[in-house]
Length: 576
Image 1 (cartoon, rainbow, N blue to C red):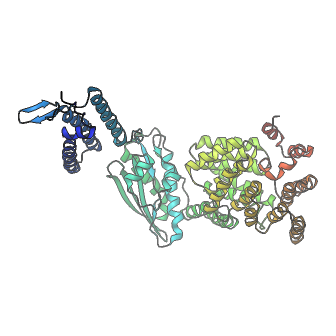
Image 2 (cartoon, rainbow, N blue to C red; image 1 turned 60 degrees about the horizontal axis):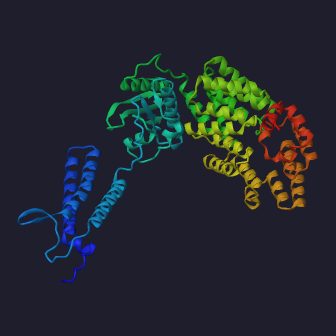
């Protein structure tokens, strides 16, 4: 009896059944087919799913060809079922065969999973009534006219946003593509809009050329384009003409009247745009520049409510920082300006925001201030500055979580340095120090002359990073606080004495903060009372001040808050 021959190895069996040959032939044939299909698909503008389906079918066909090559042999007599080879060696057992076939299916399933168009849900489809207004390109020879082209674009965006039937991308989202070399279709895809409005502005003297074009995003075709060669006097009519042309091209049926610009003398309008731009930087130099531009604007056109409201807001920001007038004079000038704005245009939302700021920051009437903010948001619910106003009221009254939520919502609509200031203070007040630091650094990037560095210093101090805090301390009371924290009490005292002796008007609130950080309760309250009596600074943000954590348990703390009408909000913060 012949000895039993050993079974073929797995590799030998694959070779005998010509599986490797089949795989090689299949891969070559599939590659050729894909190249041809890709060429044909491009020429006929076939959708992406056609190539995806071809590749998928080829992948699925691979295991089928492997199974057929395993089970059947091609012989001169035709296709026959594979048997033992002519040497008499047995084929793989039935169990081995099924195991091999199962492994093939698992491998193919894994390949399909990896190559199938990543199975995340498709991006949302832009609705037909959606549009983004990109910042119009400044084509003027004077680069300083950038504020004019940006401001005109923003006003046009606001005009379109006032149409209920239109879904308009937020200013921050649209303006983030400024100076970016991207295709319109790519920008629209990222913004999830169906239309893009873009253009350019060339201004020379009292002449301007505005070119605008409306583009259908899915195919890049122009629905409408126009060039306006106008006098600057006609800037508002031009804005309305563009807005109406956009509406007409998009075939939207308006429920009410077409949007109207608030008209002004064109010179006043240009100064308003300049003043608003400078006011948003909130550095002392930029605020003074804003005030000068806005004063000129209302002199030219006393009936332009936005310029009056912007002027009032500017007065509020600098009322305790300028040597040109006292705090009382600054507040009085702001009140006069805001009343002018409301009397001229009772439906102007920003005017109520500014009046609310006066109630909140200058007159300690927090409920009335928040009520004005809420009314302003009712008038313009998608206005970033008004959304942020609710956060400002929350910050002042110690509702830090609400303040953070509102400031984040405002920043989603528009990137404004001031928003990062309030966001950072809300994070700082709630003890979220890393996020506070990030917010103040971001503000410093956007507005180097603003108060970002001051509160970055405070954040680093509270975090215990004293060397970094010292580097940000500057030449004021911050340096004394940092020196004391580093253990240099004598140097700190001398620094405070030098500052006090070198200034005619003592900053009582700053000194209260110095002694609050040092934990000296008596001197903290002494200087707080001094600040309140002298009225050189109203401690609006006192509930968010980390300097006064050291005196929160002192009985005098609640007595002082009662003077500010903040006691009820403090007790809401600390119900226990």
